[in-house]
Image (cartoon, rainbow, N blue to C red):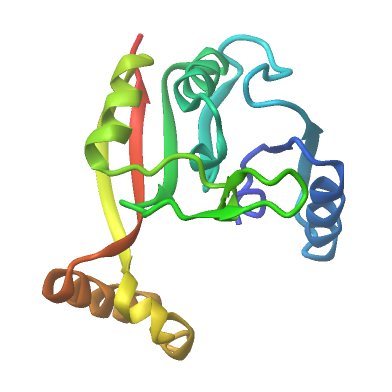
Length: 182
């Protein structure tokens, strides 16, 4: 969507297969996107080269989320925007790995975040939080509301989701928008 609006888009992933699949989808949609194989802890980009960074559903998988956000700050220009999203107040479940006989987190989620913990990481790494939103009501998600309501206009779906979140609590995700301090 951003590429079609004229933005210069660069997508990074640690997995070659993921980049190949994403590259195929981008070509099918005629989206001009640059794909880069790289590690979030050591980004292959110069200091301050991005105006904005979007990191969706990444931090919960990392050993050291603060170090990753610090590296994003390095590659982001002063005054640049970061948007992070992650599961919200997730209960990390463990299972016994049949290969190593050790407890292993389901979905490889190592951390659980809420508004305060994400704001803390961002503040510690040189950002100021501008906005934070939680969304997708967990009980409604479990009964399939997101799929059943896919035909609704986005504004109507968001209004219904906000209502369920207020009435029932338990949001599934959180997104935070922050600005890199100078």
